[in-house]
Length: 387
Image (cartoon, rainbow, N blue to C red; front, side, top):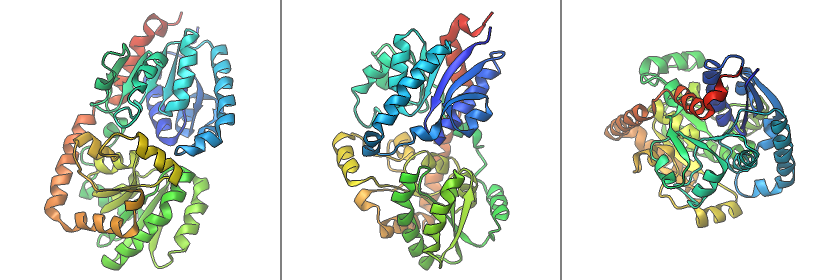
């Protein structure tokens, strides 16, 4: 009998996490079958797709409300179809509100449930920890400070580390890799290269791209021979980025299709939208300034709810400001350009920051896919050996 596992990811970062965990489980369970929702990486790892991941794409606080009817229909449809598959377990990869609701419904129907990636309970709505415990049997945490928030809830938690810290070698941000990335992109070694990471969703790109390009104009005036790299995960977003780039025709802008790794490896510094991109820049030891903008209503709600000093992952991990953050009204072209230039100009500050980045890299480098698979196998118990 084939063992079936349900799994749902709602965005690109979750797609990568889900694919890594699927690969590790496939090496342990002969003939395991995965059904659910994911992107290209999860489909390549063997996912039988029940819906397109684009149907789950939302951003901010107000967009989920606008898309609520469609998301609700999808939630109940996935519950029905997953239960029909009689899964041995269900894994919700990030995409917290949707997946926790789905996990709760499946758990009440007797399906063991896993939530992969802790919601940001350290930042806002800490009362959610008990609701998460009611929805999931197991929580897989990426960061070492997260399991403590679930003490006393009865929820089993496992700190597994972050797969990016495993995928990026300790020397991958070094000079040899930088030269190779630049050669691949046709950029000379003497150029100052700045990566611009406005986000991977259309809403994020619209909020941040023009802002980042305006900061790029200021940096180009101050730095010699400057090239700007903009990663684009999804090919259908290329025209959106190209239109914005053409409005700044005086800049040398290269669009790098695919993930951000090549652009960050080639660059001297980066302007990064808060999120996973800040972690990748940290693991490659790149100086950065972190920015984030929301719509006015979403930001007003966030100010009422958020209870954390920092939003950038390097700062959260270090417990102090390693990289400058410029949020909402503070996210102006001038302040972004100034903050990045200070880091590029001060060698001592850069060295200290990169040393701190290295320590954090080691802390997160735990063979996350394998540790996550170990925890899921323990939850499955005898069910992981179908007869």
